[in-house]
Image (tube, rainbow, N blue to C red; front, side):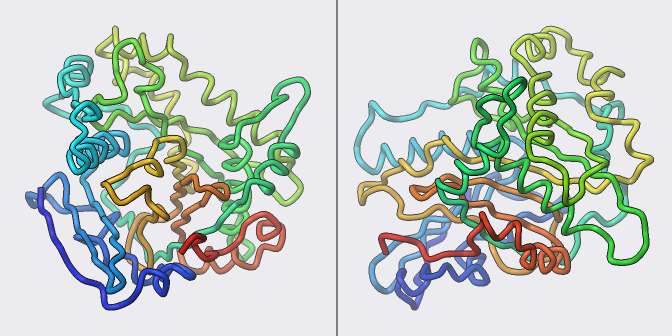
Length: 354
């Protein structure tokens, strides 16, 4: 681990009202969200930024080889407990359970990655990152719109919001020429701990994620939200506790034809455009306390950079849910002109309580 301390020659109020997204990466200990070379890198880097008003921003970067967001949360819980001298709140890490359930393979040549296959061609593009707030009223309105009395009488916040955002991202990425619209693949990142609670606890350390992959080929302005929510619900529903029990019991399942079908292997030839959805909601980041109180705001990276496009991260706030979107610049411009999208999404508002 690498630890850095630095000062910021501005007040926190000036930095956060509204957040200076173009400068967020300067608070980070390294360039974020990059396809890294094979050079030896630390698994975790931390940077403590002290503003000239006395405010503090703590920033982390990590490799995804053995650490995911839940692993980082367990680390932060321990760090904050030590700062407050609360030994009974230390989140003791569990390294053994994940490695015993999923022993590492010596070769990945036989992995059936399906539509997730990344060829040797360039996967990064010039992208921009934007932040949008969906307040609680907007989320409730979207949930009402997504309701279907027969199949989805009470859609969750994630179901309604991810369906709405995915629709408008796909529309924003349509070609401006007469070229036919490419189909889309929506990848929803699932936390295996929540689906294997008998075998994995929340303190299990590892990159314990599973992709729920959804194929969309008929998205247009007129498609109803309830149809997208039903498709999402059905797809994630395949990944039940019973499914993960099979993954656990059959060491060859991840390399099977059935797993490849779940990964939409046959869709590779369609050259679909892929969107990745991750949720940090209900993970407890807003409850972390180093001894100075709970955080005022949870941010991600920002600015323009060469990175993998078309990712969405949801972060819960007191006001609702923030959606952090990474897209190619022209596609982001299209989205920012989408009046229907902006009926529900507020671009980069001020951070309250500053």
